[in-house]
Each structure stands twice: as structure tokens, then as C-alpha cells.
Image 1 (cartoon, rainbow, N blue to C red):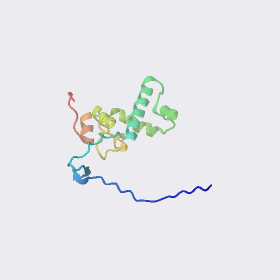
Image 2: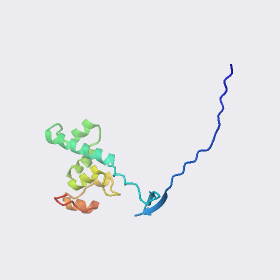
Image 3: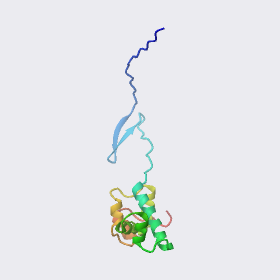
Image 4: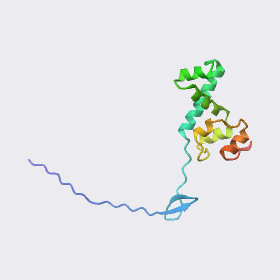
Length: 139
């Protein structure tokens, strides 16, 4: 009894009707009727979100007495005291900035290093510094 297998290679061509267009400096794929697909919601920057969470957790630890000093938090977490100090500054960010980070709407070009350096304590000044306008009380 003999068993033979025959493999034939053929080309498969798939055609998708679309065209490319630029809108607002971005390239979009348009369907044949000229509509663009629904925009994807912005994704939060994981590094910034994790840093915010860490900073607030460390602040609560200090306020509750779980750690007496920044040095103690650093020792417990296995990081340096200057790192803890820089991240603790994030707990003083304006609520609008925090909400924008958590929603993935942080201004382009703003990095964690920018937020963890010495920033003004006044929330309006922070919003002006990092771009955008503060939300009104009704939004």
C-alpha cells in the first residue's frame, strides 16, 4: 500500500475596496462609500496609571502610619527614596489631569518625568502648564 501526498501552491489574492486619505495630519482608511471606521477610544498610558496608583498607595501608607517616612516606604518597596519622593508629587496633580491620564486623554508629549518633576501646586497652573483647559463643574 502506497500513500502519496501532493502539495500544490497557488496564489490567493484578496481585494478590499478602500482608499487612503489624510485628515488632520493622520492617515485614514476610507470605505468605498467614503466613510471612515469609528475611531478607537484612547488607551491609557499604563506607565502613568501605575505610577499614579503607586503614589496614592504610598501616600495612604504614610498617612495611616504604615510607614513613618519616605525612606521607610522606599525600603518596604525596594526602591530609592528619591523615586518615592518624585512619585508622591503625583498625588498633588489636578483632578482634571488625573482623570485625563486614567481615561487615556493626557496631552501628547507629556511624559511621567514631566509630571513627577516639581510642578505648581495650583491646579489651574498645572492645567495651563500641561495643556488643556480645566473642566467646568458641570462636566
